[in-house]
Length: 419
Image (cartoon, rainbow, N blue to C red; front, side, top):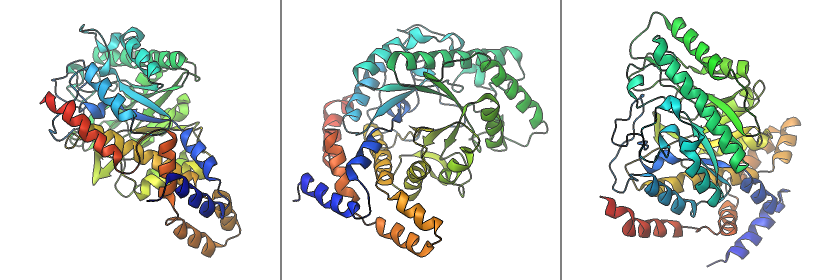
């Protein structure tokens, strides 16, 4: 068996012939934070009413045993998963994952104190935190409308929820010294064809004007707004469309969230990055894997994932694109889902960092498209796996299939007993 040191030596020579510094590439990948979604561990149940119904046109399918049932189990599971994933990491929280110590806290009254224990935990585990207000799975979202609701009382409730989320996100950034991204997604829409789309969008616009009526410090909080093509039960009209949120992000100086599952199946997010970044200050990515549509399958190391990472690297966008994962699969081991998806995102970042971008862009500028294609194809069979093994070892995480054996052991000793 070839040692990791020998593999790295081979890779340095192979990539070095193309002018790529392998060690520098590993440093670049390691410096890019990846925000991992907490809701993979418990099927988006949260701690507000963990036995409640998941609504808002989203679904988590499967009944694999071992779902985290409370805050302690979720943190313990993520701590274990964290040891299997290299790179710089954050945890993304939804508002329904508050720690209210058994008290019922209305969503329009959530505050930093309800997430203080998360901050302590994140600091102890060298993690950053991101935030998401939760506009679904609630009695006041039952009619399908939140920030675009024509009932002023309901609309105001959700506006206050949005305002509080910004305060909490800024608190995360200040306490942990790593900017927190606060992502707005609402499920508002119609199942059948509406005849007054304009009114709903006018109300939604008004709500964001109120939510963003006060400033937060960009060093600590960056707000993002997320569109969606459609959801289950809102197939005919999504109020927060891509075009709506492009305008909203531009008007308010916010990030635009691009979810890889929120567009038509023939669209790819990788192509949108350089277009959007001509006009907006930044992007929040929600990386998922759509199968036919927004099915939120576990992220795999496929061509689109590589293309997203390559576009970030090729465009020099590492400081302007904030990477988050957004998938939830309850049909297989949930901790393995975290590990597989996050490790693949790290692989893509490393894969892109190993590309001789300068050389390829020079060939393109010279209109030598023959050489450009030849190099791009031959790069696919470079000894990338050798570099990946070395990258994992630098973070003291398992290489090869070793991580899976650890997941199986944890399942036997911990999660299997949950029933």
